[in-house]
Image (cartoon, rainbow, N blue to C red; front, side, top):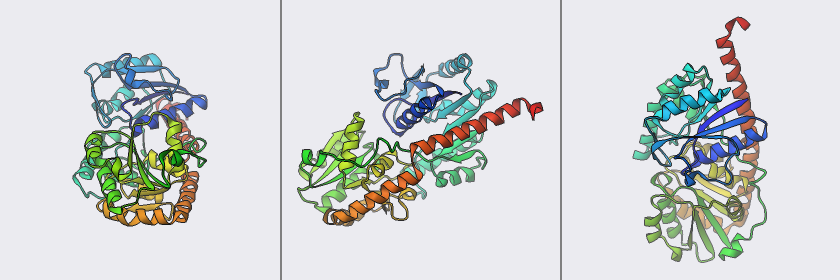
Amino acid sequence: MHIAWLGKKSPFCGNVTYGREITNVLLERGYQVTFLHFAQPHDPATADEDAPDCPEVSLPFLFKSQILTIPSLKSGKLLIEALQRLQPDLVHASLTLSPLDFRLPEICAELNLPLVATFHPAFDRRVRSITSGTQHLTYQLYAPCLANYHRVIVFSNLQRDLLIKLGVPETTVVVIPNGVDTRRYTPGPSAVKAELGAERLFVYQGRISPEKNVEALLRGWRQADMGPQCKLVIMGSGPLEASLKLFYGDHDDILWLGYLSDEQRRIDILRAADGFILPSFVEGLSLSLLEAMACGAACIATDAGADGEVLADGAGIVIDTQRVSSQLHTILPILRDHPEISQLLGHKARARVLQRYTLAANISSLEGLYSEVKTQQHLAVSPGLG
């Protein structure tokens, strides 16, 4: 089966990781994949040593960020020409929050192509802030369009219920959680603690942006007064990085590593972690959280998006989005002083990932969905065959 994958290769965000992981495994399983994405010709920003080794089609754009993409006026025409030339069996759009998302159902209907979407926007199950309210508005804006896709993949039942309430047909919305490659992301030996001079190591991995609420984590860390034997590693970059580093520097035993492109280095850090902290206001289903869980780190996350669902029933510690600093002020010293608690939570986190969130199970579910959609499209075009 030939899949035309319309997704994202830069700038780095969860959508980039999602597209890379899924398409790599599809190629391993014998699928033909063409990766269509917004990029200027010969754009070095899209270079990625872990990117799928498959044909690519670049679509021009006017603006691109981690959250939003504005295509150029001719990108729709170029997309149609590319699909006509490629003649794929199915189009899978890992939606980039672009005006082109709204045209895709019409384009694919004209070309008689089955269309599947993955809908990524983060959300909070309750509207508790301006940020979470904006995310709910995104769901309201997209729902009428998503109703015209053959299938829409979301990561949790919470997202599915929200879209159904907004009018997307029940049969259209399918839950296929994010998955992590548990062959690569595993517990194991790591020299990172010795290298960083830490007896206890705590980690954040993700964007340094408002919705991630990193300042609340930093404030809670400072209030907890963890001592020089404890280190907090911040992996990632973003618009708030420079300003936060001014107020929370190395004197607080906070180590700013920036964005790390070396996957093995990230894995080594997660393996060394006694605790992984995700303080977000809004989330979808965090791949960073799943990676930390797969590496056996004890995890603390807010109940934004589906992350609380992932850690429910003892697989981690779930905190409220509105009192992150004060909750961490209480929790962090407990994990510092009782390593057996961290070890137990780490074992439970790994077990939860193996039970529900493996990449292999994710791809198998996706294969079944592709087959189902392709069959339905074939019967719709040739009703006499039934």
